[in-house]
Image 1 (cartoon, one colour):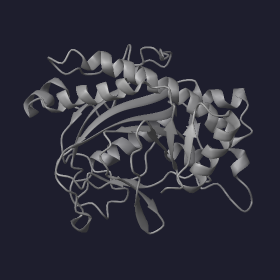
Image 2: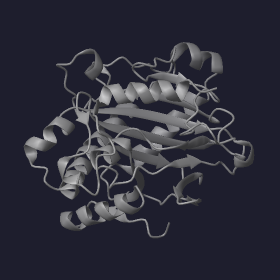
Image 3: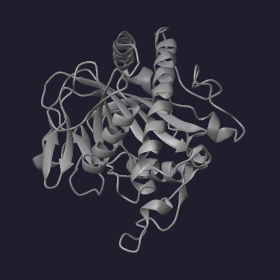
Image 4: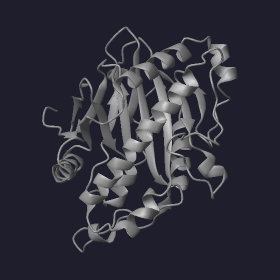
Length: 318
C-alpha cells in the first residue's frame, strides 16, 4: 500500500489529475494532503463525537432517533447494520455504533439547493442533548468537507475527460452528502468467525472523505489479499464509490474494503459520503463503452433510487 498515490491540493492541477486517474484505476483509494480542512476542526469533531457516543444508550436511542431509513439520519447501535457486500463473510452485525446527518432537504423539496456554508440548513436532523458544541462543530466540519468535495469532483471530471461544463452539471449541481460519525467497539474482530468492525463492502456514492483517529483497522481488497490502509497524519483517506465505477464502466475501481479492529480500545472515524445530484441518472458515459468493453450497467438509476436500495439492503441483513 506504500504505492497508493498521495494527492496534494497545493500542487499542480494537471499532476493531481494524473495521480487521481492512476489511483482510481489501480486502487480505488488515495490519500489527500493539504486539503484545506482545518486539522483542529478535524480533532474537535472527534471530541464532540466521543461525547455523543458516551451518552447512555437509552438517551441515544430516544433523543437521536428513531433512525430514519429514508433520510439516513439518527443513531444506530452496535450490531444493527451489516455492510458485508454479499452476505457470505459476516455472521454478526458490524461492531460499531454510528450517528448520521444528511442534507435531506434535497429529498423533501426538489427545488431546494444546498448552502455550502450551512449544508444541513432546512434539513431534518437530530442533535444530542446537553452537548451544545456538537451541532456547530458538525456544521463547520460538513461545510468544509462539502466544499472540498466540489474541488475533488472537478479533478475527477478532468480525469474522466470529455466532460465539458454542461455535461458535469447534471452530476454536480446538487451533491447529496451523509456525515457519519462512528465508534468501533473496543473488541477485536475475528474474520475466521465472521466478526468485523465493518464487513466487506464498496461504498455506494461518489467520493468518501474519511478521517480517522490514527488507530489502524481499515483494509482494502486487492486480488485475494486484504491489505492495510494505514492512516497518515494530516491526510484524509479518499475512496471511490460505486457511482464512480458505474459512471466509468468499471475503468475506475470502487474498492471493496472492511474494518478489522485489532485493539481493545475504541476506534473513532468520521466519513463524509458524497453522492452525485439526487436526480442524476448514473450509467456508463459514452467514452467508456466500446465494442470490446460493453456497458456493465445497461440501465441507469438515479442517485436517490440507488441510495435507498443500498441503505435498505444493508439494514435488512441479520
